[in-house]
Image 1 (cartoon, rainbow, N blue to C red):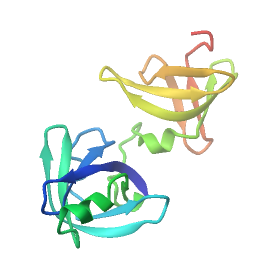
Image 2 (cartoon, one colour):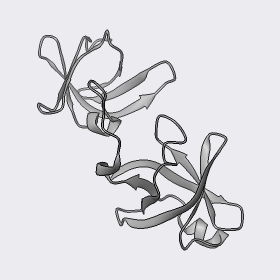
Image 3 (cartoon, rainbow, N blue to C red):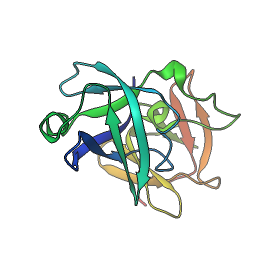
Length: 162
């Protein structure tokens, strides 16, 4: 499962939920007719009956969720889709989830740490790297030299003192 959002609250009284997405665009979840929801890793499948963009969040109505109390019970649940349903990446493109856990090394083969997460800053994405200390590394062409998923590492043009 690839987590793509989280239920933050009920929306209205008819069983709708409000969703904070973790995707590049707020409408990325709209194309999936089924979502998987989980809290504490117990995934349940729900058919999406209606979904629409509402400002910078999504609102949706799910199968078997017909009132505010039922919608409230989903608060805090993560929303995911199976990895097999995601669009295939183009050459040189990676899903954030693929980068988490990769070792980060500099051009001199010194290990800087492991990618703990990816932040979206508006200007560019930033790798959160945890090693001896936490380092924030911009995900831009001048800095990211190579991403190798098979070797499970990222080579960067970065000094640990930055």
